[in-house]
Image 1 (tube, rainbow, N blue to C red):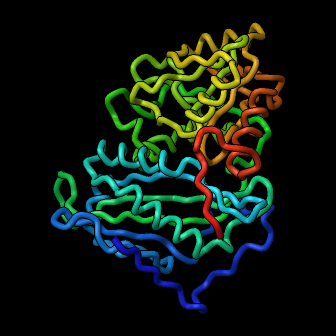
Image 2 (cartoon, rainbow, N blue to C red; image 1 turned 135 degrees about the vertical axis):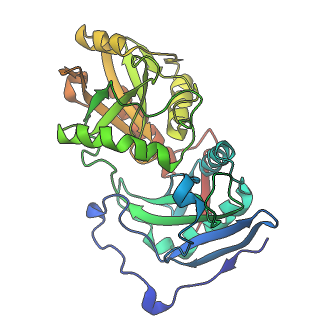
Image 3 (cartoon, rainbow, N blue to C red; image 1 turned 45 degrees about the horizontal axis):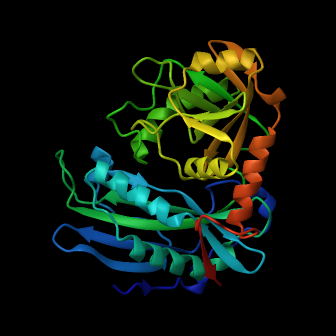
Amino acid sequence: MEIKVIKANQERLKPKPVDESSLGFGDITTDHMFSIDYRSENGWENPRVEPYGDLHIDPAAMSIHYGQEIFEGLKAYGGKDNGIYLFRARDNFERLNRSAKRLCMPEVDIDLVMEGMKKLILLDREWIPQSEGTSLYIRPTMLATEPHLGVRPAKSYLFFIIIGPVGAYYKEGLNPVKIYVEDFFVRAAIGGTGEAKTAGNYAASLLAAEEAKKKGFTQVLWLDAAERKYVEEVGTMNIFFLIDDELLTAPLNGSILPGVTRDSVIRIVKDWGLKITERSLVIDEVIDAANNGRLKEAFGTGTAAVISPVGQITYKGEDHIVAGGKMGALSRRLYDEIVAIQYGKKPDPYGWVTRIDR
């Protein structure tokens, strides 16, 4: 299927950011986007790279009323050799298709959308920042567009990709964050949509996250929905704990997002010969380990932040300091390893990186 490329008029081009140290995250988008339409009778059709612009959908579009919307988040990096490096892009689109299946939405042709994404990135390549710690954020999204009031899967959809330069996701950067253990609200339950990357999961997390921020915390640590005692994930990240010499993280039981960075950490740690275990972890075990000095490190993982060290865990009104409130050695080693692969600074033994020539 041929992908059309429609360039924006010169007068519509946006000013590019001058100071890459103040990019922030998620506020800037480039001049173009990739789009493709779906109709049940025709399948996917009309793939195009087109000028960035507003979406025109009917007020009765089913995504607005019944929540059929999924998305992904991945990054491209500007390499020092003038290459552009995509990190685990195919894995992200495979996860998008799993989310689509869970929400009764059509799966995308991964090869086609990756080709469209590459054309988009190359067209807007001048937007890729070059400073350390910056990247080009890529947001694929699918939503139901059929105008219909009534609960059933939609018959038409729009898939699009927008991109934009970003800096650090958290204002703390690599400085440790403070997390609040939420023991009333829940994010997801086994059998629900917790393992899908869908907008409703994030909307449901906002109230607890906002209340935690008012108390001075960066993020919420979610517990399981059934018993409120098993650690699941942090608001925008999977979570790892180094207790003694064993790295622990929650298993993929259907209620947490199967993070791409989470999987990267597990594979790297195994190759380093360190002990890594995926198992149900009671929050009291984490707190006890923090109190007796056995909790050496804690860190979150995700596309946006890569590795985010945790310096404080607060549970039931008590603060527990982790690693002296500093970034631990393992967190730093993992961050350096993953970032070096992402920027093409060292060999990629896993086949995670896709290089695009400018």
